Amino acid sequence: MNKWQRRTAYYLLVLSGIMLAYAVIYDYGMSVFEGEPKTFLHSLQVVVETFTTTGFGSDSPWETPEMNVLVIIMDTTGVILIFLALPVLVFPTMEDILSTTVPTSVDDSLGGHVVVCTYTARADALIAELDAWGVDSVILEPDRDTAVELIEDGYNVINADPESTEGLTDAGVDRARALVADVSDEVDASIVLAAGEVGDDELTVVSVVEDPDSAPYHRLAGADAVLSPRPLLGRGLASKVTTGISTELGDAIEIGDDFDIAELPIHRKSELVGKTLSESGIREQAGVNVIGAWFDGEFRSPPDPDAELDNGTVLLVTGREDQLQTLKQLTLSRVREFRRGETVVVGYGQVGATVAERLDEADVPYRVIDLEQKSGVDVVGDALDPDVLRAAGLEDARTVVLTLPDDTTTEFATLVIRDESPETEVVARVTETESVQKMYRAGADYVLSLASVSGRMIASTILEGEDVLSIDQQVDVIRTEAAGLVGQTLQEAQVRKRTGCTVVGVERGGTVITDVGPSFRVERGDELIVAGTDQGTNRFRELCR
Image (cartoon, rainbow, N blue to C red; front, side, top):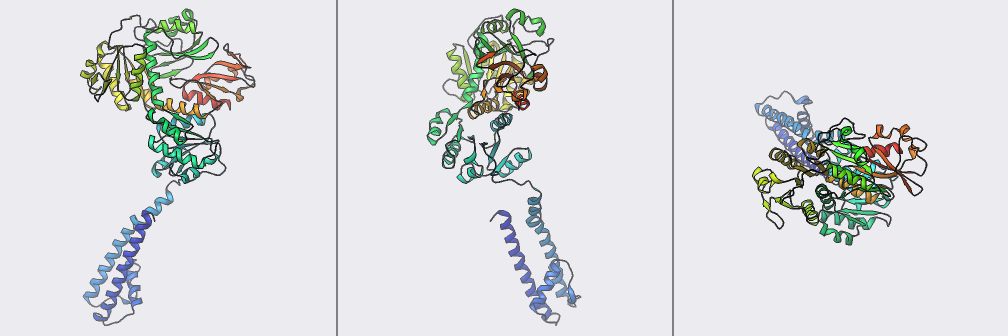
């Protein structure tokens, strides 16, 4: 019995008791005060008429003041009980009628889908990736209010317990392609165990863990893949520091033999700062092809030749390794003075610890700020306090890496750093994808979203046969067939105009073709290598269906 049913039962019980009591009193009053004895059934009828305000029948008017007072009290009691019935009975009933219906199971025809337990920012990014690949997904959400909100936002949701075999069965796990457990380390393990009872051998079970040390237990529970996005995010942030103070290319993505694609941020005091793209001579000096660029957090492909390059610009380029190395030299600062404390790491959780580990490996000096005193922390305090930042060497720092778990705090810390040391580069992590643009407006030079990294990481695990080449970068680089473009040239397909993406290469018959100009014609069986933002590559997949 639910809450509404209990309230209704209590109300009806109390109402019946009051009406019977008044019927007894009325029957007594009519005999004693009015001298007109009535049957008990007649007395009960009069009470009902009084409570419902439909009239008083043949008994009115009454001669004695006692009976008139009794009727007044009955009438008042009836009105009060009617008003009490509104919130107890009427309003909940109307709310149920008008509210969104939340399904508790999926349609029997649904199959080959991905069951996501439960809704998080990471799940949102994953679902966007799955939608782009044409893979159905179902969110298994135990909280009804959250499930209602998700349904109203257009998600496919069922309201059930992801830890129960009944809930997973209702989600069609026995017909699903994969299951993703992403709640907490303990709950995820419980979900994995339940999935082992109802899922078949074809089901891929992915568990997302907060603590990498708990991964063995999830594998023991039956998970096919155990992912920990935070260390990957930390490595991505660290690479922007370690490659920023050396000529090592770092995280270029190999497209074909001696042909790579890379993100190269322009550092402060680089000779490219202040020049337009056409004035920079990048093409002439390095021989690379600039296929896109981030300006103040906005990705443009192709970039405007008159767009001015600054320390916040990140170039997306293709070329041979030696050409990318040459451009790397151009993007670096002309001043090569490295002092202890040149890199300040703010936050020493999983991401911060991974950043510090990578900086140690690259022999890059750094200092760590954290709210708690622990091994590896150099300065204890709040990073929003300018004195704490100065104590960590902010004035001499070339780069600050923000690895704070709260996006609002990260945004404010960026503003404080910008005010205290305008020339210091800010590399940051955020949790929500929506926070990326705000971080760039606050003055960050390079931002990675945990949600985007997690979504790509999980998608690349689930989507076997589909190649997600970049995970820990701002851009998405994918390799996919393009059935919808077969027979068209890239110019005819208007890939850049319609999607904002760039085709950087095509694999045909085991050979990667990198000379893919506007006149290149797509043939059946070609695998196109495409670079762009998450939204852009999603639009490209839609175009190619």
